[in-house]
Image (cartoon, rainbow, N blue to C red; front, side, top):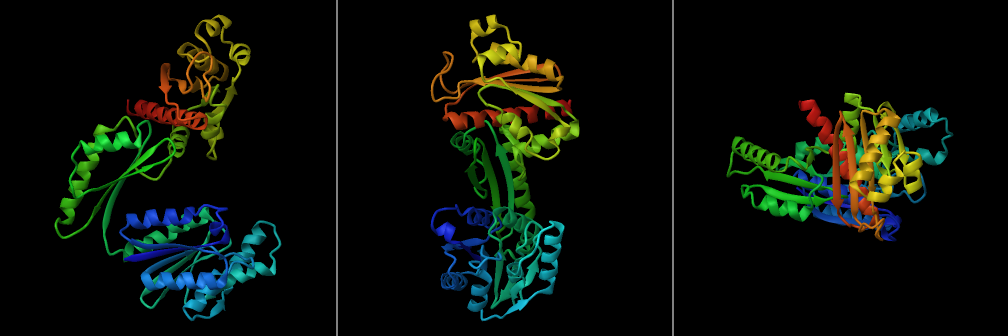
Length: 415
């Protein structure tokens, strides 16, 4: 089914805001067999919106329009959309009631402008938006399906995943089977090269998506007449088994969850108390471990010992050790993790030290990084040499830390 995406907003045209919504929609729609015909961006002017929606509707059977559904004067998407399809705007008591409830719950006064959101094109189906005030809309006309979605990325993603996707699965003409894997610790090009050597069946469509210090691998097979559904399912399952066997050291997920979400769930479920002692990561690992609500159930605290003096006085690392081996060393990171474990009484303790860059530090090249993890009396020390630049060096290390925490707890769970 040919599909078009229309993103409205002068901030997109002017380059002030990146159009992440179109990227998100295009990627997810493609995964379900929808053929992306156009991605169009226009400003907030009504005539521009009208012309863009008209063009999109002439070339596609499924049209997504994002943005311009709010209460301000430049939110003209519904009005422009209604004029393109020769529809009247009608007032929805249902939306008015919802708006009043939202503002009442927040203890805020509702202005008359907010009630403009209650006007919708006649015949439109209201899709409740629990994450904001602007409702999403669905309308079918002239054998075409239109979705109007809020421009706020968090709201759009929530609505798409929880409200829109189930409808799309019903109308998709191409039935697609997809499996995804998330990797940490292996680069995209290395992964692609090694997967190529596996000689997976040609019926599989294999794609890669590089993220921030991680990679996503997607296996996809489109149902067709050459293979029956059972054969296609088995073909995909065989490929999945091969991937999991060959890359078990790098896979952390087969779903949409991030590594922080995976680790958070494990720490909560297993009631593992965590503490960190960080040098060059500057508290980044502590920040990521406390990203999710409920992290106070497992996170005890952190010592950011960025300075040699602090390592000595707060973490009680002997001056002799620091002078003999340096602050960027296996000996130092081991002493840091053991001291932090004693100070906090934690079940799992992490320590990091390294030369973040761009300059060398304490006699070590930029990108020389050490990690120590102490869990159930098991000590693991990792030495990394990955000079991606100061910011990414720190983030890469935090990814490795989270991944190793995940693996350690999963391994102990299996035992």
